[in-house]
Every structure is written in structure tokens, then in C-alpha cells.
Amino acid sequence: MLNQFSRTELLFGTEAMNQLEQARVAVFGVGGVGGFTVEALARSGVGTIDIFDDDKVCLTNINRQIIATRKTIGKYKVEVMKERILEINPKAIVNAHQTFYSKEVADQYDFSEYTYIVDAIDTVSAKIELVMRAQEKNIPIISCMGAGNKLDPTRFEVTDIYKTSVCPLAKVMRKELKTRGVKKLKVVYSKEPARTPIEDTSNSCKNNCICPPGTERKCTVRRQVPGSTSFVPSVAGLIIAGEVIKDITGIR
Image (cartoon, rainbow, N blue to C red; front, side, top):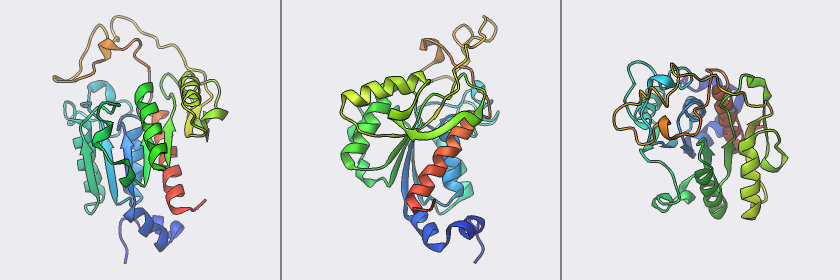
């Protein structure tokens, strides 16, 4: 019988679609990268999706985040994303966690319940914590490296963290993971050197903050607010989704 996933089933087959329906994928961060990852997972028939983010949609998110529109400004991202997933697949189970993931809250979640984990957050300490938890429970994880301040979406690669170069975030991750004895980590990263944002008083979030009321982590506390586009983080997010889907089904 035809359904919203029929075109995908033509490539993957019924067994793989059943695997996706039974899978539970956790996506940490539903911004420019993670939002597109979730979008693709939902449109591919993943049955249960856990989403983690404590942010609200901001006007400055509209240039790159799939859930960001004029109508969603000020709403919590996980709530907007949950509504969107259910509009795509009403049968999906969506667990929305309005939280900033960190070591302090990690024990609240049972990682052994996940089929796959996606790291789409930009805090090094949280990324390291995710990797360690996934390794402890032997759950596959894929991590996104830096996507900000870049213009060329064709420079992304899927590789092991210890084979990365150029990306400053990947360099920090390599060092921290090696110290902790982590042998491997699948990542999506770009070899494109990051650009320096053109920032002045008129377009600076630090000087003209427009974060919605109640925002926990404002851009004013960041050392640098990265520049971004609609076509770089989205590509990284879709690449991640593709890897997750292919790993779950075993189809390559």
C-alpha cells in the first residue's frame, strides 16, 4: 500500500523500512545541523526520535534552521520540531527534551534505549560526554564538527576523528578523546578553513541581542558569534542522517 515512505522503500526494501520504523534515534541539538538531520530521519520513517535542545527559535536562526520561521520565533525548538515531525509522520514517537545536555543531566537518560546517537551540539564538554556515554553502552554515534564560518558545502567528509585535519573543533576533540582512550569516532567535518566573521556594531548579537525572553544561553556570553549560511549546516545535517539511516539498515 502506498504511503509517505513508498519512494524510499523502492530503494531500501520492506525489511529496511521495518528496521527504521523500529529504530530509536537520539539527536542532541536541533539547530542548523541537527534540525536537518531530524527532518531527514522523520522523512525516512524512523519510528522513534528523541530530540534534545534548550534553545528558543530566534530571528537570527531563520537563515539556516529548518524550524525557524517568523511564526516560530520565541517558541522552544524541541516543541516546534516535535510538531513538525508529527506532521510528517503522525505515527512517530517523539520524545522532546527541553534541556541543555551536560554531564550534570546525563544520568537522567538511559542511553541503552537508543539505536543510534547524533551529536549536533557545539559545546566540547557536552560532545565528549556524549561520546563517552555512547561508548559505555556500545551505541553507535556520529558527531558533527565545525560548520560555522564556512561557505563550501562540498568540502564535508565522513571519516574517523583521528583522520581529520584543518577543523579546530576536530583538533580539540582528537586531543580530548585520545586522553580518554577513545579509539574511534565517526564524524562529519569540513576541510574548508573557517572565515573570520565580518562583525560591526550594527550586526553584532553581542551589542544588539534579540534573543527571545527566557533564553538561557544568549549570544552575548559567546566569545565569537559565528557566521552561517542556509546551505552549509543543512548539508552537514543531511549527510549525518544518511549515515545513520545506512548504518541502521546495513545498506550501502
